[in-house]
Length: 558
Image (cartoon, rainbow, N blue to C red; front, top):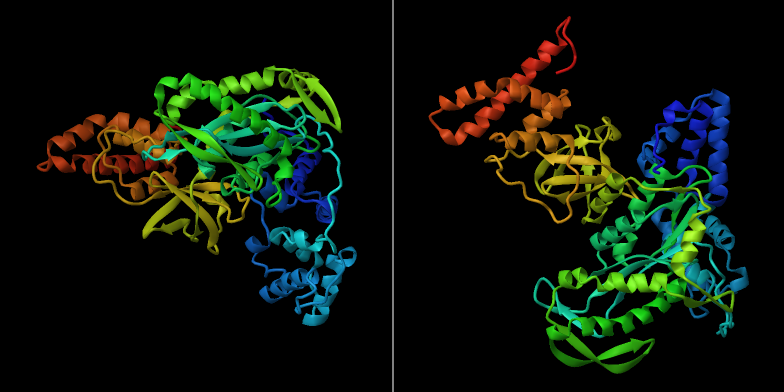
């Protein structure tokens, strides 16, 4: 069952502990300990939950940029530090002395930086910079060429590490929507401990939308144990975008000593970080022959091609099938492959020893002894909005956004933006609506903004996007009015919404005045303006209704 709940019914101490967990769950080491001590001391001193914790409970993670504080490291310090680290492992680089790997520590460079710039420099900011710029490759670069030691991978507990990767077909090509011959690509989610394949699907590329589509299906697959789960995709651009929905998932569902999903991306050019999944791809390539046999009557031609293994390549035969990606999906061949893998006995290697088990049985036995949770489908399916392309934007103090020379008004989440200074954000445009996100790489969804542009004619048919998202209340009201032959002025409708208009009130106002609208339209000399006249009359009726409701002695309901 889903664990989302109203924590306001809990005691103040329990509320504090839950909100404190949400605030510091993404921190590690000394940063986590210092933050925890600070908020615990504040709570003991005042008896009031600090405001940053309350904001964290609403998904607002304030940082240095949001508070207006200057950057911890200047550009000069950053560039000099990166230059020092890179030069320290190259004896021919004159920008810094050569430092042996054993002594190549951040504290050493910290001391040199403070002496060179003659000021205090945050060592914690340097640690963050090392992670951001991936400088570990230089700090750990060996002094001499070393031979890798033979060994094995340590076993992982079930649900401790879920690997994600894509794999292109080798022996099959089909046509995409543009008529171009391409090799289909499979993306899959794979548990390391049980070797169970949760979900896998066919696409033509590893885009953000495709990655989000399969991620939502993974979350809705079944129950999840209330524990720390590491999700390990590679560093493809589409997978990197998963940081945002993972962060939102943790804000909504993570509790102390309970569920938490940790994004644990592979290192750059490090296939060994997901070796178990890479190994399973061999059987997928073998399964391609069964697909060719299934569609033997759709073979158009064959051509020579190449299969690559490391730096070696060998000639193969590539088969061209006259089918679409949807036909291949609907054949259920991929589901057959997944079921055969999960329900068959396999021989795996654990701690250097060969053992046998059935992935489905091992996973089921583990979950039977666990306290589990399930995610809300309505919440999870909304993650698809993270897959749209994003651009930088600014929310003004009037809660508006200028995008492509048009003005949009924030109608969902307006309370999250300051009325005293503009707020930098990132936005995605879809169906004439903006989805608003925090500007960080793992920034979560903040709200929605609608265009103020006036529609020319009432819409008789609502265009459905490929990835349908839930409409906000303003869109629901607009669709209701347009279905009743009104040409909606979004600017006026948003103003009504900000003054208390709801879908139920809009429905009541329309039903009480339908005959009046018909009489007004009947008197018109210009039938083309009927939709605008209906909407303007509706807006007047709403404000009249609102004045009557606010009058002394009147009830507040519709």
